[in-house]
Image (cartoon, rainbow, N blue to C red; front, side, top):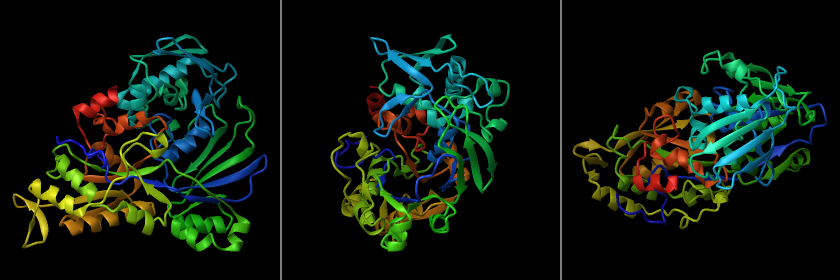
Length: 464
């Protein structure tokens, strides 16, 4: 593999990583016992604490279930189910002390056995717990010397050890004797968190009610409703009509509504830096002839004018990122990616993908450079990004088709590897080890390395 230029993103999976800075608007704070309606752009496929993968499912499950650890507004680890913890001198043993007053919503106490069961399910290949696997693979053993003590032993000292235990804890007594993937509790979960699951109307809403007996005290809200509203325009109209209490505005919506005095009188706008980013996974496992060559992946990355996209489409509400490391993680990579179509063309020529004068498309050995990009159909940004990519590649002589899928279909294709290229995204932890799941070769089957990327040097860096 040719040396990597630090000015460009790694050719592993990255084409475009955008740090979105959305503007969110909401009404006045709810009073104790009130009702808060939050629009979900994606309906979760499951509420199983271990197998749920998308950020919005994690939002719902974080209210129903408790992890051992949480983080505060400054993203520092704080106690949750674990009232305290300590590391051994060599950094390999992490001991948690559980709250004896913590109870699941059915009244059963939360014990170390539930913690160990949750870990066992998360690392079990049959559970398909792709979003949790990389954080827990370094764990060698979980021991329970007594019901309120959990000792986690790591093979080597592991920096994001605490972050891994933000995962909500499963009630062992409800899952141990049923099929984990098909259990009814995946759609009607019982946790130990501040809100109890009440109902899930497919395609409409998920309703949670306050857990009066929560160890942390009764929540101020009486009811939280997650309304399934895939369209940003519909979510805005619902906000204006008083049907939801919060909405994330697109740049165009903010330009249209944010300048109106009537809008700013009714709603409180908050502009914040989101941790979410987008990237393109080029499937490079040999199942297609296009993306196994790092030079080709690098060429496609060079073709995209990210600055123009942020300026013209996002209206400045975002920024190109250097790599799969989020800027908030503070990892210096070398500067934002550049746009250089001429260099991209030279790389493609050198890889044997040359313009066929009869079709104006690039081809090699008689095969045209033509592929399909999978994207999520329920949001505006993926289509906008895909259209910019499509236009940029067309100028290079590459024919890209866009296929829009609902979330369950897209998720199924990503897990199975049945795609040529796919636009996906991530919500990383502040710990930079997040990229392990996306780039390490061990995460190709059963992990989040959808692109089937393999590089011994990068594996060694990630392991270190």
